[in-house]
Amino acid sequence: MRRNLVIPVFVLALAILARATPAQRAAAPAAGARGAVNVRLKLSDGEKFSGVATIRLLSSEAAEVAEGKEDVGGRADFADLEVGKYSVDVNAPGFIPIRHAIDLSAGQLTATVILTMTPEASSATAAPDSLAIAISAAITREKAEKAMQALQQVGAVPAVKPNVACPLPLVLQGVGQRAEELVNNLDRFSATERVEHFAVHADGGLAAPDARSFEYVVVVSRSTERNFQIDEYRNGDMDPARFPAGIATTGSASLALIFHPNFVSEFTFTCDGLGESEGRPAWQVHFEQRPDRPNQIRSYVVYRNAHAIPLKGRAMIDAGTFQVLRMESELIKPVATIKLTQERMAIDYALVQFRTEEQQLWLPRSAELYVERNGSRYYRRHTFSNFRVFTVGTEQKVHTPKESYAFTNKSDREIFGVLTVNPIPGQALQEVSITFRIPAGGTVFKVVGPGKDVNFPAEAVDSARFAHNGPPGSIDANAYFVKASTLELVPDTVVPAAQ
Image (cartoon, rainbow, N blue to C red; front, side):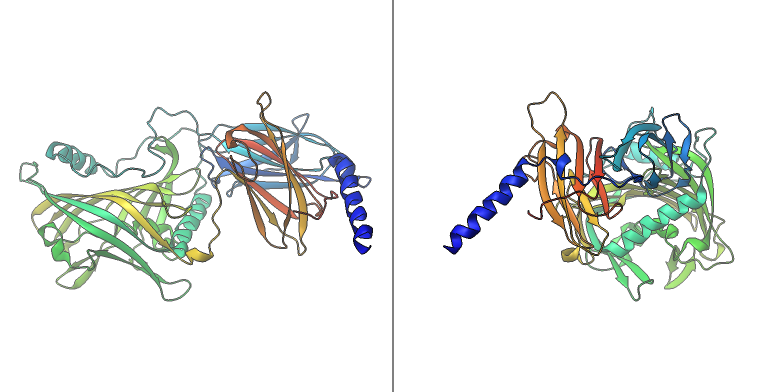
């Protein structure tokens, strides 16, 4: 008898819920309710845009509603907005400007817009996005001679775009954050390293190469939260005798750390402007060791005595991510105590996607070195392949799934919501709606793809809407898609408390 009383009530509740449309379940906004627009920028590969950008909100008459300022981070939030039509205006050096229309209505008081930043057209050929294949190991003597000649031109200033101001403080802030993230997240990485050493004859020609291969391991050790040390091992030890000519060349993994907050004060920086590195817009930043500060970056060890080597050079810094793409360095002046008259170095970095982790890191792809010391000269090339990574606290890290929506609850209570994803019009696909809860302070990912939470191809996504029962501003949302998409947030909505 007790069952007969309970079951009809449960069925009746479901029937009422099924008949109610999302519009009927939404609570009517209070009189004079104000809206908000949240803007999130990303790159065409789905990576978050972290570069310098100015994001403005304009009225339908193109008048500025909220003052935009040049900033980093790829996001802006505009609140206390009246119902009406607006447009978001985005300008970032090296990228095509964007203007995107938004309509705030009584039924949609909050909108989160995810916009894709596209680099301006370039005549250069873009480099591969990641080290999917190993770099060619062998190099002919003829190619080595051309590479050495090019290396000797380090110091020449490449061309930059005219009339583009360089916001150097913001660039240093962004690249410093990337350096901190690398050190804080990385425990160690290993790779196969090939070293090719060429002695240079008196006429400038190269001798036959002396090539060696190593199991290369970089270990990051921390003594305190702020202090760390980077050590390199070849085949398990640091013996310089393993190298050609008995001369060890190390430090390619750490040169870019001149931008780390621990070392940035040891250098002076100037910005040449916005240039290009293998098809990517990049800031050209010149650096030089300060004579009044300690030199912790580079030294030569001769007969167990360390000699600091003051460097100057140039870094190419990705304008969209603040990752270091290339480093070039040379001596500020000869070091007479060890008879070092010239050292020129160039290091190229590449995005490495690790198969065992949903993680990407920028690590050295190749390094070249030309040295004149004590009357002898040599050219040396290092190439790296077969990377493996070991991160700090890997078992505790939450990796962002590709082709997904992310919802973060910034409140102190759980929030329920309904995500509705619409396919591109004209396709034989139906919109998909899923209901879920987000715990207080937690983040929930909803993945798009066959057999996933939203069961249709990610490239078919046109737009999405997330209605939730939290107050305005309680949910921070993002989307990780290669294709551009929009995501509307509708707060203060009656949502069933069910999965």
